Image 1 (cartoon, one colour):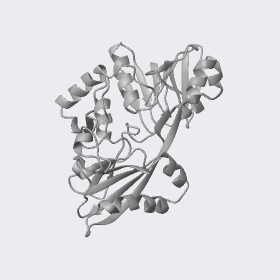
Image 2 (cartoon, one colour):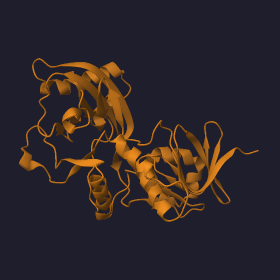
Image 3 (tube, helix red, strand yellow):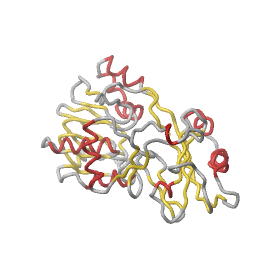
Image 4 (cartoon, one colour):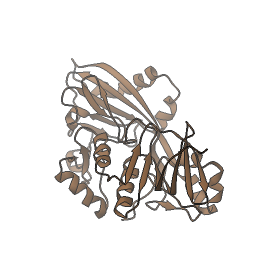
Amino acid sequence: MENIKTTVDVLIVGAGICGLMAAQVLAKCGLSALILDKGRSVGGRLATRRIGEGLADHGAQFFTVRSPRLQEQVDRWLTNGVVYLWSNGFSDGNRSVEAFDGHPRYAVRGGMNALAKYAASELPKTVTILTNIKVTRLNSTNDGWHAIDENATIYQGKALLLTPPVPQSLSLLGNLVEQMAVDEADLMRKIDYAPCLAGLFVVDGVVKLPEPGALQRPDEAVSWVADNQRKGISPRETVITVHANGDLSKTLWDKSDSEGLGRLQKYVEPWLANDAHIREAQLKRWRYAQPTTLHPERFLISTSNPLVAFAGDAFGERE
């Protein structure tokens, strides 16, 4: 007998902010949804880690708003004290404050992961979230979709929304990709990502990063350096987050953690006071960190049957 655990209108794979917000829209339309995620918690790259006595965002560092629809949502988060304006841009070490581009950069009280947890807490009872569920394959049925996990448990839905990085979504679909229209499958296969190695460094002493406590250098080997204490999420300890760009991350990807941290630490040291030192360090690998080839629309709904849609950070915003 099939081990079917639950049946809903829409199965959503991925409990990042995209999957969570999609579930909110579906619920407002009167539809039930089940969100499955392999992680221990919701959030995806909205990731915050405790290190020492401090906190550090090691995935997404902030977010911006480029559409009225999202601004309405963010205004509500601002009113509720969930998010706050961190800066209108970041120095590259040479530019003055006047060179910032002016778009508000929003951060989250308690770290970026707290936003995902807040969004999850707002979902109604028609939405269920299951974490620590590793979906291993997807099957189409006469009346919808089956998501099968590593324990052979089946989750059933009339429609399917895939929000993980597109290569992972295509892998889950397997040969079912061939049921999509050729142009749709080609569009999905063209989406690409750069990896990112993130270093977290606990510092005893003063860190002299420029205001507001971060550097952004998109064209440099290390594209991001930020002080989580000055950001406002780590009051008890100074923790620095460092992001390697795609090229350096590829170079270091298969190296040991100690070698990767050693390379990244060299980009922290110039910003430390003479008597400051690094006491603890951790490395995090993000295989699909930064979409480099985007889909121009906010989502793709396949014309295949049963209904399957793709969304996530590799999908552009038209508004």
